Length: 379
Image (cartoon, rainbow, N blue to C red; front, side, top):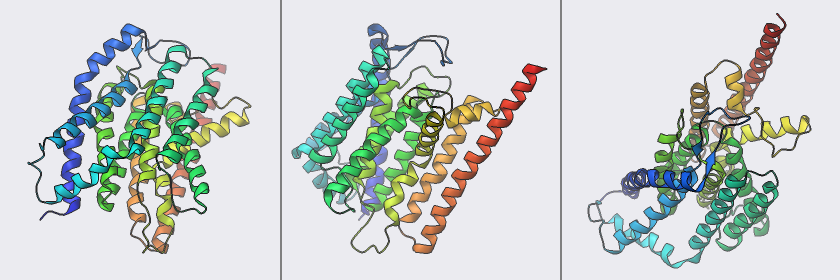
């Protein structure tokens, strides 16, 4: 008899691989369609690419996930899963069965579809006036997910407080990844790392739905990342960055971090720890824009990735450094599940110190590089 964790691990590998292949197959067709309809990112101010690039990443991820879920449902229906070991597969299938019956998951799909569509519209028109409409749709999608699809945290009372905080969380993460999509491979790579950690947590906790959802997303995102890592051939676009942010926000809300036997509340911080680097980047950028009296929705070059390049790192190195930081902080989330109060406090303290020192060194280095450039200009 194989353990549930073993079965979930095998299932996750199969799902990731299958979605990855599906995404690779549809990529050239989606790219051609994007070029044909004009869904392109053109060279211009604050652009580093010299040619037009299709913003098809979001469509590739969204459609490959939908196709994988549809094809997998058909395969399960006809019993094409006999290669999986042990009787535990019956338990997994019994747990998946409610997905076909409960409207909550359909509503999650509707929320994701709304964000994907408004992202495509924004990618077409690229108007600053779209910002308020995007925000309205983001809140609408979040409200559908929280109030109608029952996707929210449960550890705050009354329940309405948990629901409101969950809406704010979803909208915040959607915008975080929207802002994070500022360098080739950055947003896609970070989403893969965070999803891998969430999938691991799902396997550890026996969260079957989380494992399947994260596996589907990881396969699609990895296929996209192959074509997006420097030098990128395709971009996420707003349709992709908001799709990625919504999926990650939902995954963090779907995991049960506390059980009735838990005496500590520290595990509820796991979502913040897993997404610490993206949240830190967004928070620092917003602070800089507010201090400079600029609208927070107007882009600039003050993201962590940009500041790393200003202190001498290449764009590829800057992305890899942020990958490593994200992996370092995200993996700490595992430890909070089973540690006592003192180890939990040490973990949280170390993460805060790591982020503080990184930002401090980056800020110091940024100021130094600016002084050097000014000195060179004067001389």
